[in-house]
Length: 350
Image 1 (tube, rainbow, N blue to C red):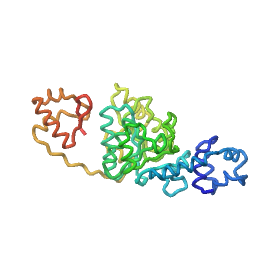
Image 2 (image 1 turned 60 degrees about the horizontal axis):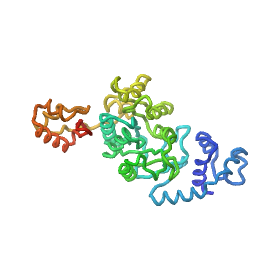
Image 3 (image 1 turned 180 degrees about the vertical axis):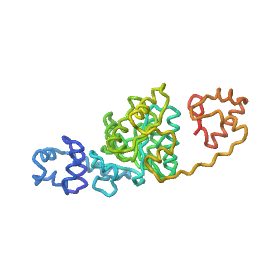
Image 4 (image 1 turned 90 degrees about the horizontal axis):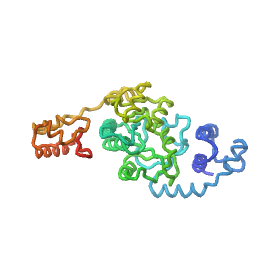
């Protein structure tokens, strides 16, 4: 039996957990005999479990499906398996992958609320883009909110991004992220431990979070409530010896309570990009972007727009300009890519 097939079968074997499977791989040079008749060295109980495996045709059809979609398989014994992830005790034996991005050591997880604020999404995108600009790869889970924004920012630069899915590699979840999913599959990397066709079940996402934490040198929580799943990723990061960081927020806003609690418990407070670099990537230097040139009228409008969203009516009032003039300046500032419009007639700095 081919060792690749045997490792896939072991990864799908019911009745033993990920740590037990990892122990088998670390103990035995060959896994194929486990599923063959001469397997006494593995022990009767384990051989009994292995003999019950009936998924051979599914493995065969999955490999054909992966090939058709230009995806592949990397096992824990392959050179291409990420070393940081390999070091965690419950690392997946098999990862299904699609994309061109090579997994290097300089990776950072950016996670947070699915119901993120405009400010939180804006910040996640900006951090993702800045880190990626010097070659750092951003890892996240393709979820709504912070994950989506972090991926989008990272795709703008050379570091790229890795999306770890809570479903089969052939399924885009959430479905509204189809364009982002396709872009990551072309320019970044999609990863999943789940078999092709496996649906995004609720318990998959906490399991998936160990891969996000395991792949990364550090975990940054941008925005999270007390019940946010991103706190699971942060906790796992601590267990794996990763740096855990959080962006603080108002004590009066529920969406920041999880991140603020992490800081109280010892996570590093991050209020600028340099904090991340010093903590996880010493030696990196960011080139500061040259300020965009704006004229007098543009400055009058730009000066009243901050990193918290502000409504168009308030911009008109504070700028002292006529509505038509304000709208013209807003259009110019958007074209210069230094502000963005948010739903409901709000604007925010990029």
